[in-house]
Amino acid sequence: MEWEVVIGLEIHTQLATKSKIFSGAPTAYGAAPNTQACAVDLGLPGVLPVLNEEAVKMAIKFGLAVDAEIADRSVFARKNYFYPDLPKGYQISQYELPVVGKGEISIELEDGSEKVIGITRAHLEEDAGKSLHEDFHGETGIDLNRAGTPLLEIVSEPDMRSAKEAVAYMKKIHSLVRYLEICDGNMQEGSFRCDANVSIRPKGQEQFGTRTELKNINSFRNVERAINFEIERQIDVLEGGGEVVQETRLYDADKNETRSMRSKEEANDYRYFPDPDLLPLVVDKELINSVRATLPELPNEKRDRFVNELGLSLYDASVLTSSRELADYFEAVLKASGGKEPKQCANWVIVELSGALNKAGLDITESPVSAEQLAGVLKRIADNTISGKIAKTVFDALWKGEGKDADAIIEAKGLKQVTDTGAIESMIDEVLADNPDQVQQYRDGKEQLLGYFVGQVMKASRGKANPAQVNDILKKKLAG
Ligand code: ADP
Ligand code: MG
Image (cartoon, rainbow, N blue to C red; front, side, top):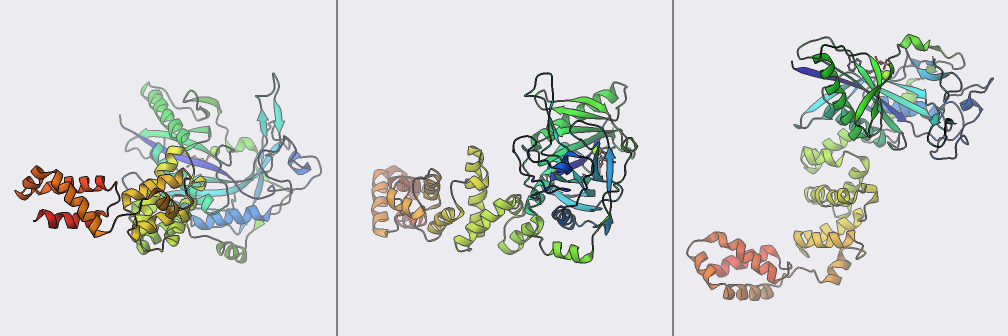
C-alpha cells in the first residue's frame, strides 16, 4: 500500500510587545518566578483586561505580509479549562472570529520549485503560566510570569505532504516573523513553538485520515523527527489492521518517539463564549493603512530584487534572504565594497563566511568578521592587490582577529600580489630552467602542462604572483 502524508501546523509565536496582551506587566524573559505577573495575569477577582494595541498591530502586520483578509470585527472568547498554570480557569483567545483570516505563503521545495501553503487563520490569544516540576520533590511549582504574554497562533491548511515540507514552511514563517520584527523567534525560550497535526491516507484517496496532534516541539530538527516517527507509527497501526485514534501526543526528543498524552478534546469541551469583559476588536482602514506603511521589504520581494537587480541566481538570492540579518549583512558588504561585484560578494558571504560560521556554530550576528572587514578583502581582490586564493588567507586572519582590516593584514604578512613583470619573468625563467623535460614535452604538444608550470611559479612566489600575468608570460615564453 502506498500512503500519502498530510500535515497541518499550528505555530505559536510570542509577540514582541513590551507588556502583556491584557495587562501592563512586562513580558521580559528570565525574571525570578512570579515577579512579572500582576493582578490581571493572576486572575484575581474584579480585575478587567485591557487590550494591548501593539499586539493588534503586530497581528495585522503578519496578516498583511501573508496576503490575508484582516477582519474588521473580531471577537475574544473564553476557552474554559482547568489547569494549575491558568488561575482564571479560562484562556482568552479568539475563536469564531479571528483578526487574521485566510492567507498564503510560498515555500521552496528541494527540487527548486515553489509550493503555496494556505494559512487558515491567525488569532490573538494569551499564553498560560508554567508548571515547574524539576526543582520540587513531590510538588509542582507554578510560575505565572508567562501568563498573559501575547501569542499569535498561526494555523495552516493541511497542505504539507512530508516532514521536509513542514520544516520548510515552519522556517519560512520563522524568517517572516523576524523580518516583520513581531517575534524574536527564540525557540529555546519558547517564543516560537509548533504543534504538528499528522495523518496518512492511501494514495489517491480524497478523504483525510484520522490525525494526531504532536505537542512540545521546539526545534526544526525535532519537528522533522517527530513527524517522521509519527508517520511510521501510523503506517504500522493501519497495516497491522488497527485504527489511528484522534489524540494529542507528546514528542519525547530524548527517546525520539511520540507518546499518547490525552484523547483529543473537541472544541465544545471548552465551552467557548465571547468574553463579556472585552469589546469586539474593530479594525478600520486607517489602522490597516498605518500598519501597512510600517511593512519592511518582505523576504520574497528582497529575493526577487537580488535576482532582477543584482543578477544573482535564484538559489543564492534565496539563501541570502533566508534571514533578515544575513540579507542585511550581504547588502552591507556590497555597499562597502563599492557595489560592483554582487555575484562575488554573494559567493563570499554564502561560501566562506557562512561556512566558517557554521563550523564555529555561530550566528551571522555573532560573526567575528564584520561586513566592512569583508568588503575590505573584496576591494583588494578587485584592484588586484591580492588573488582570490590569498584573500582566503586574509579572511582567516581577520576571523582570528590578527589585524584590524584587510590592508593591515596584507601589509603585516607581506601578502601583496607581485605584479611587477620583471619579478614574475625571472621566477618563470627559473622554473623553466629547472624543468627542461617538461618544457620539451609542452613544446611537443602536451599543452596541458601549462597548469603544472603555473603551479610551480605560484609556489615559487608563495601564492603572491598575479595568476593572470603568470599565465600570459608563461605562454609567451613557452611558445619560444
Ligand atoms: P484544533 O483547533 O482542534 O486543533 P483545527 O481544525 O483548527 O483543529 O485544525 C488544526 C490543524 O490541523 C490545522 O493546521 C489543520 O490544517 C490540521 N488538520 C486538520 N485535519 C487534518 C488531517 N486530517 N491531517 C492533518 N492535519 C490536519
Ligand atoms: Mg490544535
